[in-house]
Length: 114
Image (cartoon, rainbow, N blue to C red; front, side, top):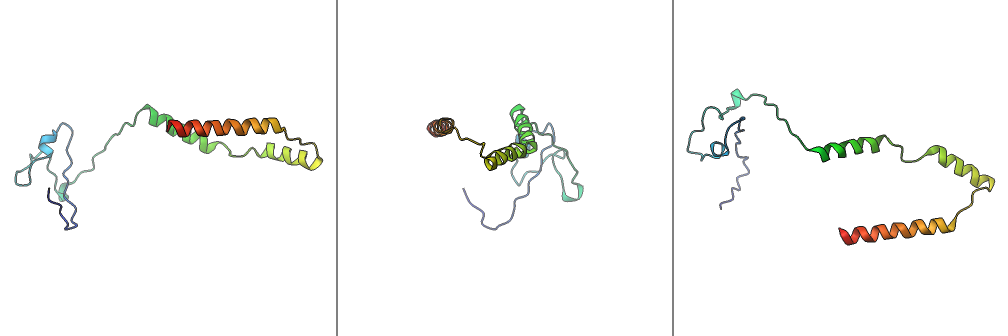
């Protein structure tokens, strides 16, 4: 296979609906059928519809929901700040330790499965 190092971009002729791959992959010395040939002066805007699937739609919905959800609950932060300043806030060391252990387990299992 010869690699062209000229830096020129090859000309691509788009296929219209119903045109076969065989028609679009003709050699340079053959004349393409008039139904697939386009010249720069007669180029038309052609709409292309793309269906990404159900999963892509779900991911887009999740992304929109996540972007509209605040990262920090400012009301909860204000309550905790107030409790700390008044000396009412108490840390439950057991709950913190359990949370850390659960996080480490999740990370280890994700690393092993991925």
